[in-house]
Length: 424
Image (cartoon, rainbow, N blue to C red; front, side, top):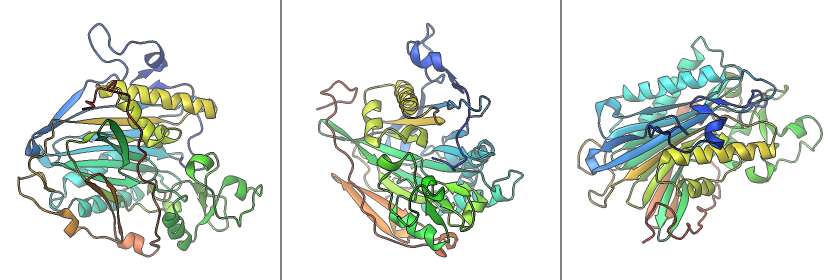
């Protein structure tokens, strides 16, 4: 959702990977078999420690901003394979900039975050500690760079593959989702949870830091500011609760965590990530990493349903971006920037169980070394999804731990063997 002044401006996209004709008129392949929907080749990377491979593609599409034809795409992305020279460690990230210097912020974080991670000697042994350190160091460096992040910044959703384990670090309201095969169904399981004032724990934390939490209508006197309930994001997404300083009409962020945003940091908008861990099994088909331009009008399950119809992630990226774009224009007179990475998990077997560091076949349990404020679990079949929140001193001063009821993953039947994923 960005800041209140955020993503409003531009003409229909010149995508960084093509233009509108690619979505409407073109067949997926040119005569040379180049995939023109995404403009990218299909990438493959092996994970030798567990004898499987990742097959991925991505797409980024500048938003349609009729009031600002020259507005840049503020989204950026990063894919880094063989981090630290290790063939079993791979990084995928999407960064959604906002504010006047949002493009510069997202590009800065895209470049620095993975570099800091890659140079951390503790990465394999303690990914959660390394993730927290990388985010907070990147935030510090952005504050001290030549980029004015007073009212600009970026969200970040990143997935680090270490052997057969995913570590997902999230700051903001972009999202990572994994597709899980369950009989003849494919279900969406969220790997991150949007950090917005809709969440009771995040609402409580920023209130303790001195934030006023109000929608634009409440700030402008059109609705009662004393009513501190806003329904949910699906019903109230058009005028969400935002964060404001006590005696001013700024910064108006609709998220509670980000990198940058030095003004909002004073009222609780922190760069400390929520880090989640998932051990992969053969039932995990693919995962999606995308900006909120995708998820504004599409649920996680809807995205997984669409992606599961395509054996080629390039087709899936194009279809989801096109549908997201269409839904934006049906609801508003503009669209957000849209960025999506889809990673297929190929050839993973049940052998070599246990959580490993990706450097050897030995088992170890990162969970025993994770520093936590709280931990909650969502179980899907035999899989345990573990969300770990850091106890970093950057957050402790304003941290409030509240219980939060999370809905289980939505379960819907997949088309009867019409998808490329086997239904037997």
